[in-house]
Structures are given as C-alpha cells and as structure tokens.
Image (cartoon, rainbow, N blue to C red):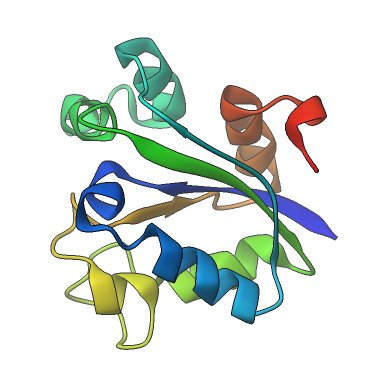
Length: 137
C-alpha cells in the first residue's frame, strides 16, 4: 500500500466540488486515511512549492494556494500515486481528458482544482508539510 498527498485547492473549495472529488477516489477503491481543511500561511505555501522557488511563476503558485482554504488529504491504496495522478488528468485542464478530475472540473492551468504528489519522494516530503503520522487513521 502506498500513501500520497492530495490537495483540493482553494478553487475546488470555492466551487463546492470537494465531495465529488473525494467520492471519485473512494469509488475507485482508494482510502482517505487523513483529511483536514486549512488556510496556508505564505511560509507553508512556499514550502509546498519549494522545488519551483527559482521559477518565474513561483509567486503566482504561492499566492493562489494561500488565497483561500484548501482540503489536504492522505490517500492510501495500491499504486496510489500513479492512480491519483491518472485520475487528476493533465495539469492544463485544456489538455485533460474528459472523465478526469481536471478535464471535468477545472478552468485553467492555475485554477486546476487539485494537487497530487508526483512520486514517492515528493509524497513523503509533502505529507510531512501537512500531517504527522498520528493524524493517519
């Protein structure tokens, strides 16, 4: 079994689609073993996107992720990282296939509803930003 971080970004919360996204994961057989709603500080947002700190779009990413509340989840399942990323669809919703979360629910590349860890190392790093092990059920 594998754990991954999933964030339902501020646009997902504002649109009221968090329940729909969670339902998709559960129907697929993934388990939500940790979940919380929070408002990130600038420092937390910068920590989350630290791998992009030298890119010109870094401040836009941080400003968006701290712009409103988000839902952070620990999702567990067999091959959870790959499965979640497949279900999310392409980062750019204009390129995301219908039936994917972004293909069905997102508007543009910045407001793309969801974040999922892209590999085991980033999952471990990102999970540690949002959760401690005692918060996993």
